[in-house]
Length: 295
Picture (cartoon, rainbow, N blue to C red):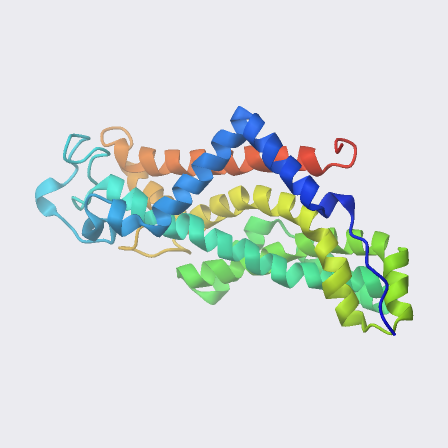
């Protein structure tokens, strides 16, 4: 028996995504945010080629240049070990940006299918999944991540795992809400009548319709995860010296703020710019995909 053609929601159509691109391009603030995000990601990917002193960015010391102020040779100055701060900021973008991207992606991959399963099946499956979700949501995400990271031990990988564990419930709730609204739709009922398995219905018909709200949440969450990752590094639970990390650099430079202000200021400014860019872009996407705003 052939399965009837499955209609897709207008919000997921190609026309809608062209509309998203056109809105971002026409909005100077959103376009600037997108350009900043892309520029920082490219900077993280090609850090060794861009950084003026990549070996110092990776942690090699230069005692002859200790605490050097900003100059032509060191545009952002040098830290207490003589390492070029600009190079440290550029190389540190890897842990500050790429790791949070993986955190959000894995949180989505873990949380969205669970939410879709809960919303589609209902009953005791829904109750079990959502009560576990509520248990995780009962704690502030950063506080829970700190507790998990402390239990797992110090290190960038441990911090990433801690953030994934504390972030997946948000995507479970989003996917569950969408699935509840879709499980009675006629294209889902048609697939059920055709004998399609629950797994195929969830992954082929339910989850694709959660892309829009999850994309909005993930974009906004990127800024929050970057702050959380920086916070864990600041507390000594994330990236460990001599590896570069924006949060770790702020922690190392905070005691020198009165005289050597550049050590903590520039990595802190990088965090501020990237987080602001993700939040502004997320706000734009939320306005576009909000059914009350969508045209």
